[in-house]
Amino acid sequence: MGTGGEGKSFAALALAAAVTRGTPLFGESTALPPSDVIIQNAENALPFVIKPRLDMLGADCSRVHCINDNGKPLTLTDSRIEAAICKHRAVLTILDPIQSFLGESFSMNRAESVRPMLTHLERVAERTKSAVLLIGHISKGRGKAQHRGLGSVDIINSIPSALCLGKAEGLDRDTRAIAALKNNFAELGATQLFRLNKTDGFQWLGESEVTPEDIMNFSAAKQREDKSKTDEAVEFLTDLLADAAAPAKEAIELAAEMGISKRTLERARAAIGVKAKQIDGHWEWSL
Image 1 (cartoon, rainbow, N blue to C red):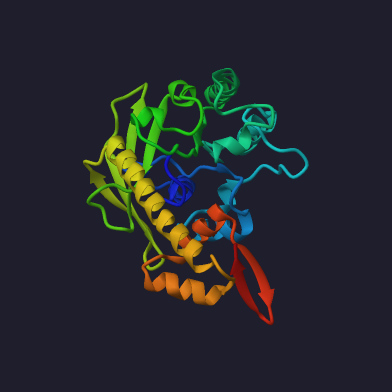
Image 2 (cartoon, rainbow, N blue to C red; image 1 turned 30 degrees about the horizontal axis):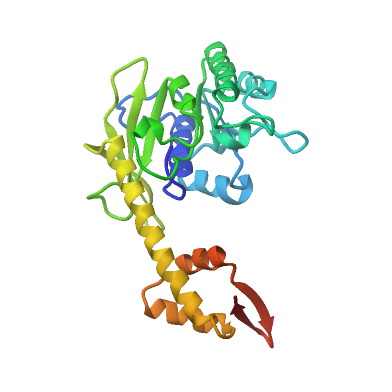
């Protein structure tokens, strides 16, 4: 689990690629034979995002499979998951993100909804001897790492192994950490670092002393910083558009001069309901 945009899906694909090639996973020196994997990603298109990333990571894509859920949405209790694992003898199944596979009648915030689904999935993993990797987000705010997962704390309580992924103090902008939060069956593994950028792609960097709390604290601090920046952008837009509409291009350029990024400006626009209208070939913003 981790905040959005930090590379959770990419790291999961790196694991999948290693499994298909039969190369050691991060932190390991030995490898299992090349094996098949199942990847269900509800947020990124398979041909346009997942496949190019797998190619970049050197995966054997003939060993990567996806369950066709066009006619019926897939849930954690769907019999098609176990059927696909058995059909392809997959040793790893990735469900990304978990909330997309709970079904409309289930709530992430209710233990009575979540635990039966996870128990069912646990039994599937036991019967098929396949690892199941669920990708989840963390909630905003502060608190102990094990209480920061999005949804009921029962999700973390009922899962035997949990990892936190994200940035931490002292790491450069392209480096992320994966830290073990809990493991019911073994000692906690060492935190692993990876780098992700457009120039070098994805690279494992080795062990680190970063803890789950370091990741969560950095995330909370970043959220507070982002909120402060958004407040500044809201004030800027409110002043700029108080009396009349303004060209969007001019607003963006003025904001940049004040150190307000376009992304922050968009958050501020949404916060106060700035409207956009195209006039004579250019866009204007107004309150």
